[in-house]
Image 1 (cartoon, helix red, strand yellow):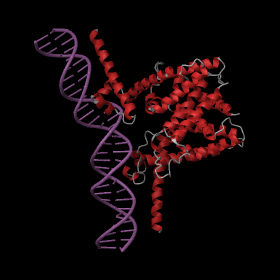
Image 2 (cartoon, rainbow over the protein chains, first blue to last red; image 1 turned 180 degrees about the vertical axis):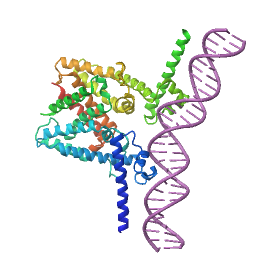
Image 3 (cartoon, chains in turn red, yellow, brown, orange; image 1 turned 90 degrees about the horizontal axis):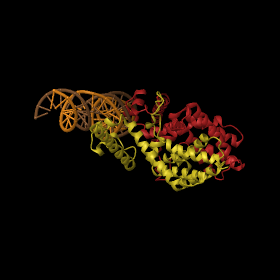
Image 4 (cartoon, rainbow over the protein chains, first blue to last red; image 1 turned 120 degrees about the vertical axis):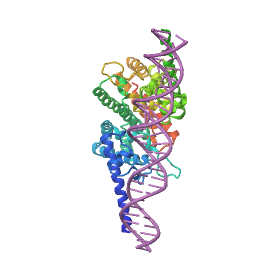
Length: 207
Length: 207
DNA sequence: TTGGATTACTGAACACTGTTCAGTAAGTTT
DNA sequence: AAACTTACTGAACAGTGTTCAGTAATCCAA
């Protein structure tokens, strides 16, 4: 069935084309300006064509989100290389924050925006929100090591993960959405305060 | 100038009418369904009329946000009544999380949504993001007391405030935006984990 | 009291958004 | 060559925030 295969390939190729254009627009002009119509114009197809490959915008955003999580996972593997679990935890935390501050639009997509989370139809038991699982598991494994070696104050690794994640996400998302303006500091001071806050937090969770 | 006064009153009255309808719609049908057109329909005026009282939707959302922060401030004053600074800190943290989980649309407006933060035109030095200041200062004062009585590990009250805020906001916003699905727990389990995480965190920041 | 200025308000339009669907044109199969 | 299938699109629908010319009511001075 060579023809069917080629058709299949072409279908995937088209999806890749759409995703690539979307991702480029996301990074170049931001989330707000990335509409179905704009993407269609970029790849020189009609807007309706996109709907032959994606059921709706959410599905497209979900794929884009998956790609963003792959990027973050790469960053983790690249930067969190220490043998010491606690040091590795620090590397993860700092890589996460840096990623969030450097790519706010991608961060939005992954952790803030409402849309692409709708994959929650657990009627039949399967599917249900796979995006970000590798990143989360990466964190979980390091935490497990730290707990095993009695380096962490937490007993439960889920609570530990939730605590660490909430802290770094809290810092990034408050800053990305400009809520730290209420603290009345300059931009540099805020980034500095964020760094200090992470260090203090990492000190506290150590045994 | 009685007439000018009456005009002034009527102008404020109209603003109040718009705000009241907006707030009701926010709480009843959520952020997504609260459009200028829907608000106009509710108060039985043309959409264009709203633009005689608010320059754009952001300005309206800003006022709405201010009102939401007043609500949170009331909750703080109501629930954070302990004499002990650390106990009071705990009451604040838990009140914050409860508020966020119970009124996700208001929480959105206050801490997540992009729009109404645009008040950052510090050209002349004035204005610049007043919303939420009372809430933040309330937290700051309690932290100062705790630091003065050497109950907190933090030395800098700004870092302390940032740390605590980031933690509670991280927990609420990840949950409100369904990102905790990746942890593979039921809804009850998640809320339980959030509670435990706060308790653990409050234990850690104690000297 | 009347006429002109001021004010409050609105209908209709503009430029967007996501999405759908009938219709066309090209490719494939028989 | 005819019939069927697939890939694609133009135009439309319903919604959004926003603007603006035009109307109707109110106010003020002559």
